[in-house]
Length: 171
Length: 270
Image (cartoon, rainbow over all chains, first blue to last red; front, side, top):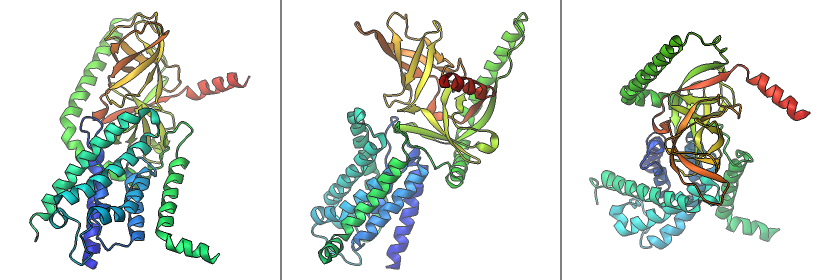
C-alpha cells in the first residue's frame, strides 16, 4: 500500500514536471502539443476508489492549469477521464482481476488492450481539452486535426515510456 | 426525503463528478472576459519564479543566437545614428515620448489558440496593463496582467488580437488578425480593393489604437489575391517577429498616454 502511494506520488511529480517544463514547450510543426500528464490517471492502481480517482484528477488538472496559463480546462478534461476510466477498464480489459501485483501495463494486459485503453482515453482527454481551449466552433476542423495529431504523439510517448520503464522488470 | 438520500448515496460518485466538473466550469467562465479570452492569475510569484529559474537554465543553449540578434540590433542602431548625423538640417529632435523597459521572456507559447508570454518585469519596474511589448524584430503583444515582479502578455498570436496597422508605402489603414493557427503568419483584413498591394510590401503599426506606437514593424505581405466583387480584401502576412525564439523584449512606456486617454474620454463624454 505504502509502495503504491510512493510510486504514484513519484509519478505525479515527474509527469507534472515533464509536462510544464518539456511538453508545454514542445513545438512540433507549431501546433502539436502532447499532454502526457494524463498517464498519471491512466496508470493508477486498479483498486483505487472511484472518488479518489476523481479527486486526483482534479488535483493534477489544477496543477497543470496553474502552470500553463489556462484555468479550468485541464481540470475539466482530466476529471472526465478519471470518471470514465473504470468503465473503460471494465470493457476494454475485462479479464483483469484486482490484486496486489496487478498493474496496468503492456506486460500484464497485452499490447492491444493497453493501446485501446490508453488510446481511447487520451483521445477523449485531448479532444475535450482542445475544444475547451479554443472555445469557438468556427475552428472546428482545425481543432480536430490538432487534437488528433497531438493525441497520436501522446500515445506514442506513453508506449515508449512503457517499454523504457517496464521492460527490465519481472514479467 | 429518504428516497432522495438513498438516491444521492447510490449515485454519490456521479454527483462528485458533477460537482468537480461544475467547479471547473465556474473557474473557466469566471476567468473569461466577454471576448472569450482568459484573464490570468498565474502571474503569481510562485509560478513566475519557477519559470524564471527554468529559463535561467535553458538560456545557455540559446546564448549564441541571442548574441547574434543583439549584434544585428546594434548594427541597425549604429546605421540609424549615421543617418541622423548625416542629416544636420533636421528640425529639433522629437521629444522622447517613449521609454523602453527591457524584460526577459520567462515563459512563452505559440501553438495554442490563445498564446501568452510571461516577462520578468512587473509593477515594481513600472509595467502597467495595456502596455505594448515589442522586440527588436517587431510587435509581440500587450500586457494583460501584472504582479509585483512579473507580467503576463497577450501575444499577437491570440484569437482575439486585433491590431490597427497600415501599409507603409501608401499609409492605408487596415487590421491585423491572427486566425490561421500558424505562428508565423497573420491576416491583414479590411484592405480597400482599390489599394495597390503587392507581395513583399511592409506592414507597420498605425499608432491609432493608442497601444502600439506608430511605425513598429509587423510583417510583410506574403500572399494577396484580390477577389472581384468584394470591396474589402484580405492578405496573408508573415510576421517579422520570430515568436518561437523570443528572449528579450521591450515594454514601451508612453509618457503621454494618460493625457491622450483623458482627451479621448473627454471627447467621448461630450
